[in-house]
Image 1 (cartoon, one colour):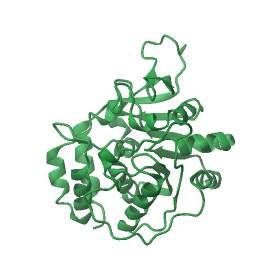
Image 2: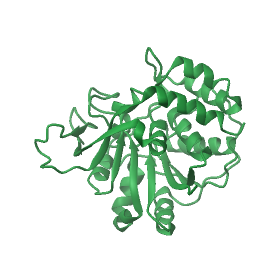
Image 3: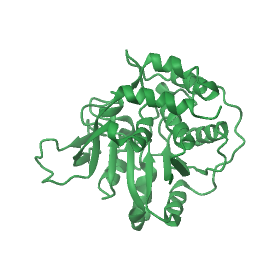
Image 4: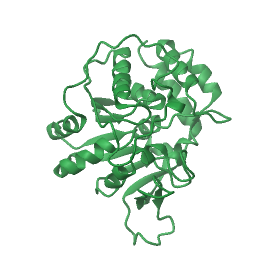
Length: 306
């Protein structure tokens, strides 16, 4: 089976950790590069967390490049109140011995794309600052990106305001650049991720799945994004989509990003086709098979080496 080459741009973060765990362990993927960005916690911490996870999974061969420490324009606000001060609460990782790649993230992404024999998928599960800077600095590289699979946004309501989702809110100016870039986009936002809650039953089963299952169980248990019937693991939905696109219903919409005012960070879809004049710039996830998602997650973790 031919592997899917991936670049992961992340801000771990508990749900990023689950996405990374699946991506680096599933034989369908060949993760070429992981980059960090400030988001759930500072970029120093998100970089360290990526290295912690790669060391845990014995994947030292995958380079980790440190990315943007601040949004393009907006003041940085983390989500430590959800993800804890370290970003990975609840599990005691040993001290990191791996080092990050000396290249800045944007340069590392550019070189990885340029050297690739075919266009690659970038999965971005944090703020899109690195991606926006890449597109601004190296616009010619767009042709080497087959798709951007983005966790973020919502067309039905937000989680940091009534309209804004956290990743887009963190750097709305970057999100606007990305959505206006012309690169094919799949938007896996709150419309999907808040349907695909990891149930309490799934969480209990996760704890029985060896060292990896227990590590993820402890992270998710400490994770403060909580609903009555489970917890959302927003970012891993992007990986689920790549493996099982049939399980997520999408619709093509024109997405515009609000960059100022009380609706800052909103991703507005022209659902009624009033102003887009038939143009679309994203496939937007609107529905998901949540039962299958829970089953799939347990199957993925059960197959990881412990």
